[in-house]
Each structure stands twice: as C-alpha cells, then as structure tokens.
Image 1 (cartoon, rainbow, N blue to C red):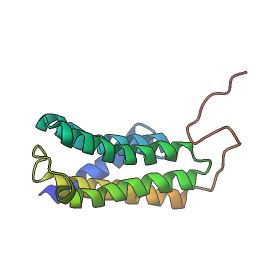
Image 2 (image 1 turned 120 degrees about the vertical axis):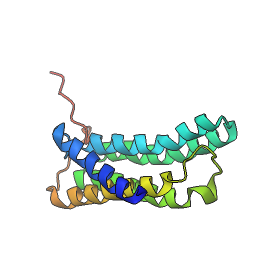
Image 3 (image 1 turned 45 degrees about the vertical axis):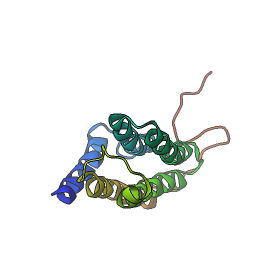
Length: 150
C-alpha cells in the first residue's frame, strides 16, 4: 500500500506543478527536494533526540545543497539533472536510512513510500531535462528568473 500511495503522491506532486503553472520550473522541483530532505529532520524533532537531529540535519544539508546548486547552474538541463539526481539519490537513501540512522519516530511505512515518491518525481525531472531545449543563461544570471533592474 505504501508503494501505491508513493506512486500516487509522486504523480500528484508533478500534477500540482502543472496546476500551479510551475511544472517546468526549476525552483519548483528544487523546493520539492528541499522539503523531502527536511522530513527526516522533522521526525528527529518528534523523537526528541538531539544527536539524531544533528545527523539528520547534516544529511539534509547535502540534499539541500544539491537543490540550491541546481537553481544556480547556467544550463537548464544541468539544473534539472542535478535536482533529478538529488531526488533519485534521496530515494536510495530512504531504502538504507535505517542502516545509517536510528530514528525511532520514522514510521515503518515511510521508507518505501518516500522512496517511490522521490523516484517518480526524479524520473519526471530527468524527462524534463531531456525534453527541454538546451538553454544557458548569460553570466550573472541563473535558472531562477529575476526581473532586471533598470
């Protein structure tokens, strides 16, 4: 049941992106990766274990770093590719989490659920990276669109 729910949630996230007109926006998928990475920190807070919290924060920082770096790359393909890699890697991390971190607040069903969500959204992000035309940004500009000051 957790796997089926993960598939539905994964497609739900992609669908939500399109409903909000963010389905091809790098910051949307970057934000998804950040939120996904922070869920284990939330579980650590619920467990009330400072040591587990520190470890979960350190791990989340790596995924957050990938998400933020993805928004700063000059190529949309590389940006989507890095964010997709972060999502798929997090899916793998979900499967080995218990071997690396003892966090008693993580529900038993969470690992397969989250792994499937990560992989579904990650694969979709890879599809976007392949489909989108290669576009680079001028020096000083990045994947996040900002209005120019005149």
